[in-house]
Length: 266
Image 1: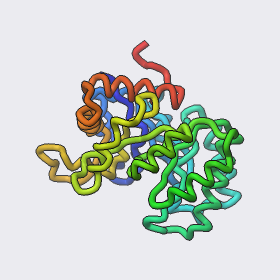
Image 2: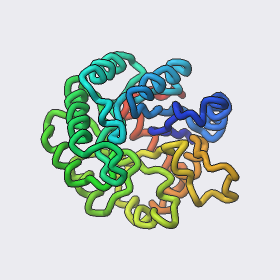
Image 3: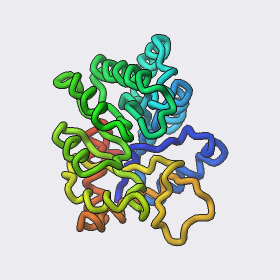
Image 4: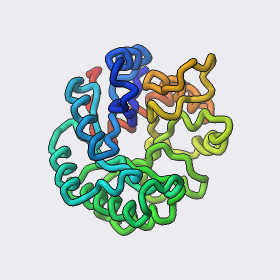
């Protein structure tokens, strides 16, 4: 069984001391490729640097998360464009809107998002998107670029059934994380994932965040890591009434098609 984690924050400081061991454990459960999330002006170059140390296994995105929207100056835009000249950088993002935490003013979030949408148009690269409690503005801004953008994945989807169908109608891909395994917040996702076409569904850990709460026994630490992607795909398979192998195969095929990844087994 081959797995691809499309969203792992391996540049997070919690991985600084034991990243080789983290990668080894990921390989042991069948992970053959990972995309490191670049989510800030500082974090995106770090994501690229880590990816360059592990060719054909690790890749990266480059962008600015809405929490860091105030960073997205003209100089930052130049820096992002330079990062995207590297072959390891596969997508623009993590970018989008987050009205749940509002860590950056909403006008600044919308401006940074619009600039990164234009970046994706200019580079003709896929988008790695973030949206939380901002669906209407998010969809409206994406519609402003209708016919210009390429592929887009809504990373760590946690929205409603209505929002899911609007995303699918817009031809977006959907990223599912360990949020699915959260008995407090993820039950609605369990009811919806069977409605996502297999060629639009990908899996991710968003590590070190979102440790799947249904792991038994629960580790004493709270740091999520890529090896738990195997647990996520097992849970996803149950909710989709398919085998773990089928769920893994479909997600891996979709990820390779979305990011243009080579099958390293060939």
